[in-house]
Image (cartoon, rainbow, N blue to C red; front, side):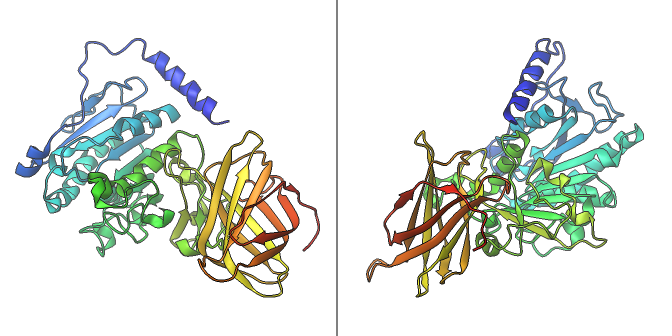
Length: 458
């Protein structure tokens, strides 16, 4: 249902570009190379403005003069996009995607903060030293906007890696009155262990949300916002290379995933629901599938619409909220969360893993191997396992289950199931599917037709 709206906006904006802004210069993001990185680049900041009236033709904003662009309407929401360290000098590959996706959603000012001259260097320490200088330049321009009638409430900063801390420095200079800051995998090296005024912090804006996607390398592990999202636990991201043989992608894929997850949230193909939890392990074990302890009683979504979740504002001194979720390997990254409830009637306790596969009449299948930790099945006790699927089928014609103890040798066991139930987390009102009285032979796939669950207590 969301795709047609996005498509309509695309057509509308395409029509607006029929009469391009001819005769006026378009500015581009600074494109450097490895030579510049080796010799070093002095800091220079270029502010590139995009609006719905100049989608494909950036206008440069002069930092030293009064507001000089007829495209900049200070009454609108203004988004600053701040990139991070650029070791090779090339423009980030996600720039146009994030700019255009934002403008598809809302009529706003999008200002790309190009500090590539200053971020391009083989010496990371030099780029990190420039972050506060960039923040001071941004504050001077925001001051001009405020003098023209802009509101801090309408200022939204999206910072990537080092850019996340730049955004935090700007927010700190305004005593946390900026409307919002989103940190996309804030840089960890040289910032870990720093005091709040030396890095991004929840006090830097009215709402601070952070996506951590590379906490074991280039990113920052600890929480830095009002709500911190940890896709796939915040470490290794699915679809990213696992060995150094993959070249540069091995080093940057996890780090960049935060940006691609955010961009995916702009396109409205699906909303990535997340689950507040103490740890990724607890989330994977299905211990955090309810958001009833928060107001409103809904789980937060990651990305652009994260600010619609205001549970953190209910308390006077809100605790840090960490939210966990899993993703697919590629855009739009969404997966479907289900609970598989199993009640067994084995007299002896069984321990093992379950693999579940869903099938449609058309022959489409999706599988979830629930193998995070060994499940313990005891007689007449319900075990609820969190299953994650790459696809979400409205109508399931067949289900298969396979039980395994993980042992290669030794006796084969049976799991006698009194009832199995499949229920959606995202849509609790959806029809629940059940099957009663079946026996799973170890390592043997058992296929059956599910039926609507009976309204009985078990």
